[in-house]
Amino acid sequence: MTHPIITIDGPSGAGKGTVAYRLAEHFGFELLDSGALYRIVGLMAFKQGLLDAGRADENELANLTASLNLSFRPNTATKTVEILIDDKPLTDDIRNETVGGYASKVAVFPKVRTALLDLQRNIAHGKKGLVADGRDMGTVIFPDAPVKVFLTASAKARADRRVLQLQTAGKVADYEAILADIIERDKRDENRSVAPSRPAADALVIDSSDKSADVVFDEILAFAQGRL
Ligand code: DC
Image (cartoon, rainbow, N blue to C red; front, side, top):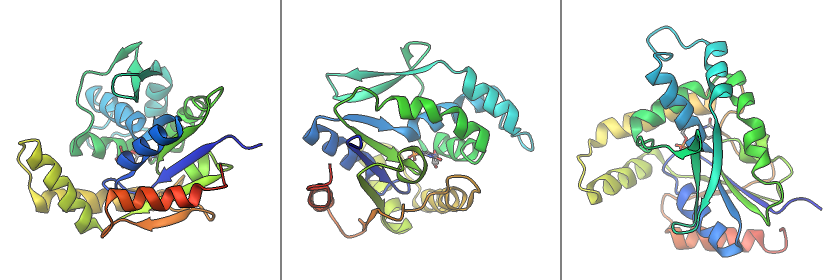
């Protein structure tokens, strides 16, 4: 029997995180936010000067990735899985465009991706089930997952959502800069040589540009029916 795994891949801002959280809650599964791993690696690489102009050396970045003591801990209060570094939750903000950019830069290197492979696969062991969100969950990390989804949306719709999110949090939002960031990151994530962001052959593809989170959730539930 295949392990009950739901993979949700797609670009930033398509609503993967929200729907992954709701699916995990619905099924009582664990959650893997693989983007957070690349964000932590990207942030650490930046702090150590490894992303300075013209530097970005694959072996150096892979060594850094392998040396990071990363682990997971379920947070029962927020019902999410925290990612720990040296057994402590990371205190820096990794959920911003700048760190997203660092993550996308380190993520192009095959050896960096390999260094994160076992960590991601091991999280499924011994668990009732898993919802994994990222770019290559259905294509590379969990190719046998019975339920695969590729959730996308137009760059414009994603920029609109991000602006609204920032404004709601009382932060300044520059629409043009956010849209440009999204387009640049999509291009890098889709065109890299290893594990490019694309739907698995057996994935349900959903364009959420004009769909509410409820509609997306219901479509995935209907697709998952009988597959898990
Ligand atoms: O999903 P996110 O925005 O948190 O991901 C940040 C970056 O990390 C994304 O631009 C590309 C990279 N990433 C990846 O290459 N593979 C994954 N499975 C998840 C993220």
